[in-house]
Image (cartoon, rainbow, N blue to C red):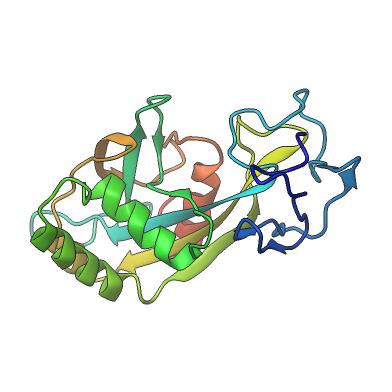
Length: 227
């Protein structure tokens, strides 16, 4: 039965499903459940079922937007059209080869805050492959750096995997290194679902996966940066 989980217990929609320790509430409000199956609140997609997504209904992701100012060889901010230029950490996805924010799915029982740190560490710093000592250092540094973030977006994501009955939602949080010194201690190294990682200059010409460019534009506007 598609409307039940592996324990053959009906899934609880529009609620925290304690049986499976999964939050099935939508960031955009209550959604319809028709004959035991959730219905995409934004509209039809042309595809029924769960598709490639892991859960029926909302699938929550966390996307860290890590930024710093682009600087010249003398350490001064690079300016374009009278505005400072931002850089973001972007990863190249292994599956579709597109560049994206280093985010990921919120696992059952996990929090968005922890997922933001974990995914950045795994995809942009290759924390899964380093020694236990180095991983501990990375996690402690990320704990400090990711302590103060600004919520950029919380809602429905226009993702190619969305179906009529399963869809992506995200919380995007900006972590800005204003001095440029905080992230210098890290060596960017692709890992997990990423095959490449680098600092990328922010502009309207940037091409990113799904609606990630919209999230980056929102960050650029908040910092009054070049776009």
